[in-house]
Image (tube, rainbow, N blue to C red):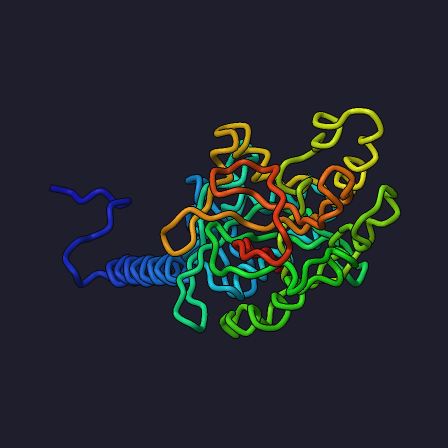
Length: 327
């Protein structure tokens, strides 16, 4: 039978056969290289899924990708926070927070905590309560992430003596957080704290909103308004002439997103906290600005162990410290 001229010989001796074999070898090498590239990309975290199941983009400087809050190192959370802070707008910051699993697809703060040990062996849990919420104390813009303890890690007095003179700024609680409590933090966290400007009544007894000024704090407890939003305690209870005291309380910052979510979902039950397994009250940094209805006795505000948010306690009492900080 006559062989068709366009069909290559398959005898293994014709010169066209080695050419075909060399082409196959090149293809095998290319496939091997592609396989190695895919394996390397997988090990580096390329295409890792975000917390909501959507792909997360690598950072380009180490492959930082989305994961559960408890799986981030403090350095990684500080990097995420820095990216959110550096965003050109709140919308861009929100998109970054969603990319890294801090916010869910609806824009709500994801229900998760980060656990770590204090140096005294206490297990501490914190959650994100705000994104681009607190102003940095150096005036350079907003901190990316604000954290608050999910349960009470320690108890303290608001003041050693029965006074609220000087408000939050002069309080023993503030000094204790900056010294004794900070010493309990692991070094990898303590070195990353970003000082922020906290608005507080730094006078004590007052009906003047100008008494609310800023302090630079790395560690703090939240104000009444940061937890509850607008309050009308004095207006509701005492009516005529009392609204000025609510105005002072309402000048102490803005409500954190997590508390707005939690209160909308669960009411004041969302404010109950424990210390060493038992229900406990916890301090707000807001001092009660009027003594008119309290027999001239000084009081600081706190959330009661039942979750009732309008408690007033003598500053020498011991209550929980629900500590907040920014990265």
